[in-house]
Image (cartoon, rainbow, N blue to C red; front, side):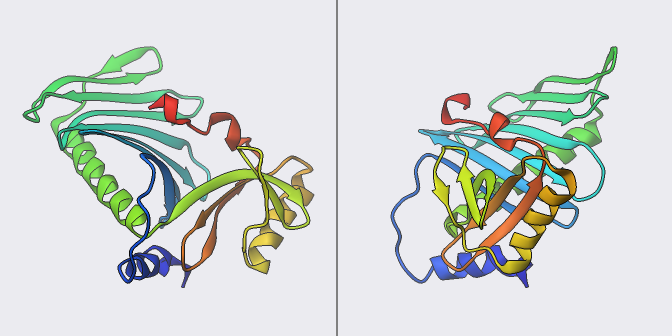
Length: 214
């Protein structure tokens, strides 16, 4: 049922006019294999986007930066947050032709295959369309630290009580009880609902991007 979250809010958004969103936004969604967070900055004819994929099971968190200028994809930078580096950088000219490519592994560099480049380009356009849909539905991401008593402190220092359901609050409390560590929480807010996105013992506020980073 929760997986219908983005679709339902998008449909609701089409029923009434709402104020424009700021140029810098954050959104996200639950994918089949993990949580996806998307930060986006629109500026004149350019779009810059950072996606963060965190798997449900073991695996590296993937940070990917995308850039578009005048509607054309101009850059992709993928970084794996892992002990073993595996970073990919691609840059494109205005006509879409590849101008630079590199895959950085531990102690060596490799070229990126033509098939892999096409997959990266396809995924970039897919993520842009998903971002468009989430923002049209006013699905917005917030992050913060659990304070107990169904209260969260956002990364900006505001104390709030999101309308998460009881099972989601239990999940947050159980992680803190099991680990004894400070718990970070990411959640989504939209006109139709509020949804827990991720709970972890990593301090997400330390790396949360700011508008100036774009």
